Image (cartoon, rainbow, N blue to C red; front, side, top):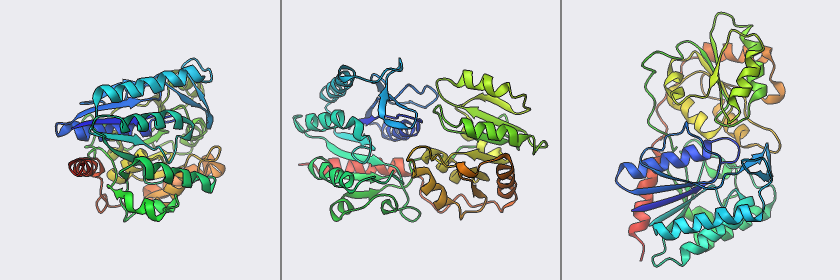
Length: 378
């Protein structure tokens, strides 16, 4: 089959990372995959087996998702959006996919609705209409107004064959964060969590007995990093290592190093997942991919969910994980060196939690579901 995945990450890189994991799963069993990425480039992510189409990139203006900025920092104008839309539709027409996957839309990315709707409408005009599915994570940003859920339902009804929820329903169901209508319930397909295979410990032992501090692949997390550097002084017997993401990582690293700290400070690295099983503890936000890494590794963890602006998704996820052994949650409002130090000590002292019992084969299950739907086409 031919698979086209449309995704735009605007702040961190989690959306693109998940889309690429799906793409690699399709490619691993012989399918042809193209991922159309509308966010900024993330070269640290694995694109093996996937053709990556880079659209003119966009990012949010911090946590203001109503202002979308170009690489030059300008607000994207009509012509810029038109260029993206044209590239998407050309890719669709050229590829003639059997399966079209829109990541997050129509449950999010409403500021890009015009280009997604153009893509969906173009798919209806192909000689053979593709199977169309939405791909969403375990927890969504709840709709701020009821009409947003109604509008999403209308799009699902008109265009979509299924909605793939990348969660294990034994742990998290969609209705925790989104109103599920009877129509939507009929189209939901839970896949299990979309995660790469659990990482083996780093062959060089990197991360051994360290506190690993991370904030995803985007340019956020400065308050977390600064607090971690101050906390390191309270736990001088443990090596701290900060992994700083984002296009401005070098500038931010230089600023952190000026704080005269014994911590190791370096850019986000692709072998982070291999370092995690060896670590004494992890200190991080609570994005989807980070949460799965922690669940797979069993590493003691302190979660500081991202809650700037109106963001609530990470807080919902962190609260759902907090009953597990070795997981402590500190809100950004309560984050101080003392509270972080206490949380790290508590996480390390807890009994090691089990790493089995949940389904992490969501990528493989997604391939199975898409194949079943494609075979059912008339």
